Image (cartoon, rainbow, N blue to C red):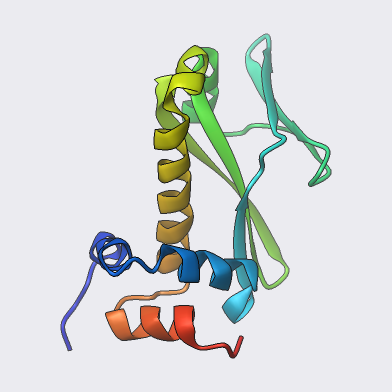
Length: 143
């Protein structure tokens, strides 16, 4: 069996135009896994600390990752995601190439990066390491 790396699988999903099917599968919590962008997130710093708040997800915590704190302090645009696998929940951060004040001019690029992050994270988490597994995940209606 041929070995594929996660980026190979992502390229397969994009080449085959399976993004919509893949995102639908994520929203349906297939294989008891989901990931979503926290659209209402607020990020701010106080002294040496950085915090994230989301009313929709009931989050109000300190950001523990020094690299993310540095990006936020440097005013880079950061997307935040929440994944759920079974009862396990995790926060994920994605630092975009643009600065916060450049967001308005880069919304299409940001949306593309957000979708690709969600796809790649799902590919890795669920070990979707062959095109056949991807097809089954996207097209099989059984959860």
